Structure formats: C-alpha cells, structure tokens
Amino acid sequence: MGYRPFVVHVATLMRLPGVRQRQVRIGHLDDLVATCSEVPSGAEILVDVDMEAVHGGILVQGVIKAPWVAECRRCLEPINGNLRVDVHELFAEGDWREVEEGRIYLLSGEHLDLEPMVRDAVMLELPLAPVCNDACKGLCPSCGTNLNVSSCSCEPVVDSRFEVLRMLYS
Ligand SMILES: [Zn+2]
Ligand SMILES: [Zn+2]
Picture: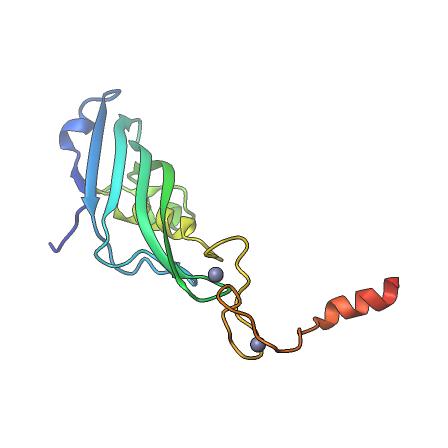
C-alpha cells in the first residue's frame, strides 16, 4: 500500500454505535487541479472530522482545509489563498451504482479511506475565476501592459455588444 494519509482503521468504532471519534489528519495529495486554480502538490491538507457509526455505515462530518495557488484571471499575476470546506458524508457498504450517483462513499472492511471525500470537496471549492483584487484592471488587450502597474496609449477597445445597446437606447 502506497502513501494513503487519510485511511482510518474503523473496526473498533463500528462496534460502538453512537460514539463519536475525532480524527485529525494532515497529508498531501497530487492532482488536485481545477481549470483555474490548484492545490500545490506537497502542500498540507488538513482533515478534521468526527466519525460516528450509524446504521449501515459511518457518518463523517467536519472540515477540510487546503492552500491553493492560481493566476489572476485578469492580470495573470500569481495569487494564493486557503480554502475551507465543511463536509457531512456517509460512508456505507453499498454498490458502485450508489457511489456513482454520489449518494455514498464506499466503506469496505475495517479501513475507511477519506481520500475520495477530500478530493471531491476540495475540487468543488477551488476558485473558478480567482482575481488578485476585485479592482484589478487586468492587462491591456492590445499591448499586454499590466494596467495595475502602468498605463499605455492604446485606444480603448469597444465591446461591440455594448455598442449595439448604446445605439438602441440612445
Ligand atoms: Zn490581477
Ligand atoms: Zn495597451
């Protein structure tokens, strides 16, 4: 078995319905890459959850935290941040159909691997259109000058969609 930082041995817990057990794990995962942002490989991902045996499986609830890096969508400067996701999921004995429908995570035997839940939660939370600052002016579309840093003498580009509206309403 390779590096699996989020595997929890649950044999004891499964014999104690109603008892909550806290698990705090720190590990890293590769390939947490969305279109516009990613968790750097090697970065620490924190999983802090309560686990409880319920009828048919184990309920997992708590929080996941991870750092992310990206390029500003407007000016392309490197930016970073931290994400935090609340999770509340059932790990259950079941078949793959339920897993594919996203209703459960699979519990097999005495080891519960939190990794699929961590991956799903982080991927959903990675920013889709990160900007360095809401007021970022971006790059000049003609000459590429970073307009946060300096200005250029290019003619402003007129968005033709707005030009049509202007003619309609003037
Ligand atoms: Zn920017
Ligand atoms: Zn320019």
